[in-house]
Image (cartoon, rainbow, N blue to C red; front, top):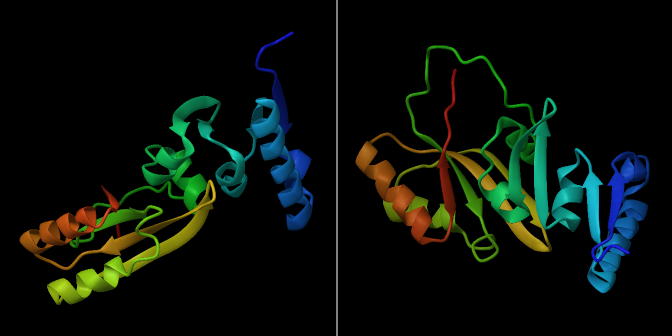
Length: 181
């Protein structure tokens, strides 16, 4: 008898169900995992299922493993295009042009402690400069509020570095974003 039995659940097992039934099944699986210490492997393209039930995630793109790790870490710092697409729900693959937007663009991730703080408003007030919110989203990851924003920073490298330092001191994870016109 295996010491750590596994259950395999494919996406089709919940994809046709209504949200309430899907939630009930996911809660049942979490309970089974917790009480019986059974590893459950879920194959899905729905990031909401992953963030609701999983501790670890492996991202497969075109049959190749492109990223794996802790769900919170992958959500905060996705490295592959496939992970970024799953998290944002939008296709980000593109053919870049030669003209790059002149302004600096960053992606910030709000953790549990900073998700409810007005960090962006405070930064705008502190530096007396506008910060453009290009994209924003909040998700439930493992029962915790986690949000992300893509921000366009005002011109001026010194000012940009001060804003980035302030955001990092406020507990946000920051990554550069390359955008093209």
